[in-house]
Image 1 (cartoon, protein in one colour):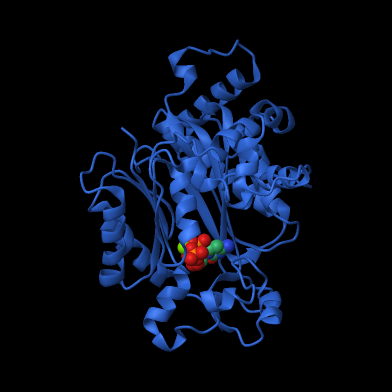
Image 2 (cartoon, helix red, strand yellow; image 1 turned 90 degrees about the horizontal axis):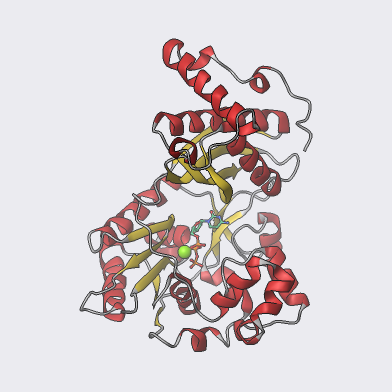
Length: 392
Ligand code: DCP
Ligand code: MG
């Protein structure tokens, strides 16, 4: 039986909330974001402002050049979170199979529901409009990849159903940029090769894509044909552990940022070990003023509960995301893909004296001391002294 996956994303979310509270904004070019003088960026723009090219993440100064009469609102995050929770609660009451993927976006799995995906999506869309007074777009398909693309194609106020078996035909004419999940390097490479539509990729020999792009070429070939078997994962399955810090002042020096990241990683790894778990996924969260937030994640080669390994992955994500000198307001690290550590199962027992065997022993000793004398009884050497390799 084909799956019924619904993707939903609110339209111009922060702006729609502002418009709800101040209806005179309707139809006007406005945006939520930071001020131009404070080197702010646009969080999101109304659809009227988007006509001028104003987009999320665009520096506000540039947005004002594109659209001089743009009205700028400072943003009210608590309020947006309240609206987000209302919408998500509405979904959660309809299906236990819900995966929230951002503040205004979720996947819902309605496989086997007699009402059918299209009718369900229409009903949910009407309810969000009636009960929360917000506009939203829906995509319905047999998998997450196609459902999300359908949402994006229909925006705003869209509802597109891609019937089973029609996935490849639906994707074929779309510009290849709509194939989400492909990284910027892959995209650049594809553009160089002369691909323009998703259909161009689908028609290309898979082996050649693999030769040129490695494993990501194979994923791409499958995705371009509309194939995707990733499940909608509920919160329990995506359970994660994370720690974050909001600085009282923005911090732009690498040494402090690196040290904070290590402290947070230390706590996350300690908490993993306390629960007897190891993590496969490492996530990094960063916020710059005024409030643009990004998250990045990566997979470890093997699940780990060791701060060294988790930190190394987190630091790599940080270095890729952070432009030197850029002020940071919040930094956080988290882990997901939790499972029982291989070490405990004894399946991949590292040989005695191997680096991770030593790190595991050290971690065990540190946990024991902390259990007895408290967290601060042990601090990693790198946390005590400014370390000199913190140079990028
Ligand atoms: N957001 C942000 N910074 C970004 C991107 C988004 O602060 N770089 C915030 C503001 C958005 C909200 O997250 O309102 C949801 O992001 P979306 O990408 O879903 O964008 P919108 O909902 O604003 O517009 P769309 O209608 O394209 O979904
Ligand atoms: Mg949205």
